[in-house]
Length: 143
Image 1 (cartoon, rainbow, N blue to C red):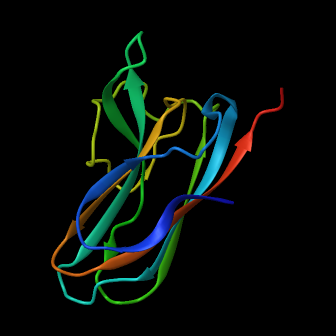
Image 2: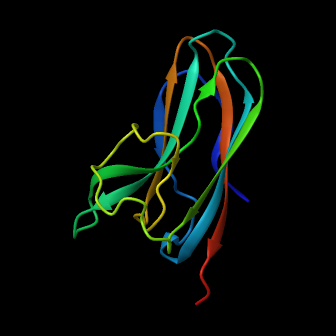
């Protein structure tokens, strides 16, 4: 398992491109873990975490991001939680045509091909703090 995002207390919405994944062209599937070790404690505090892939133009410039994993919303009830998402590249897409979605995909995983650049995007609502990290077990195809 490798760490895509290090553990830290976060109070604001943010996003970060995943830089340490390696050659995503060879990744055929992944198990991604959202590991929340401390959640805010006020009603109305929430954390939504999504993984997105880049849509690039011919020159490699990002023209947009598209959600492909959206974790179950974490509520601010103070407890530690762990959620897992399983994704496969070679599975037929659940929706062959869909509008590009950024930070709006309902909880779940869009199976099928994704871009070779990934980004983690999180939205924190309320005034509390969430301590979390994101881990991944990436399974590469044999070459």
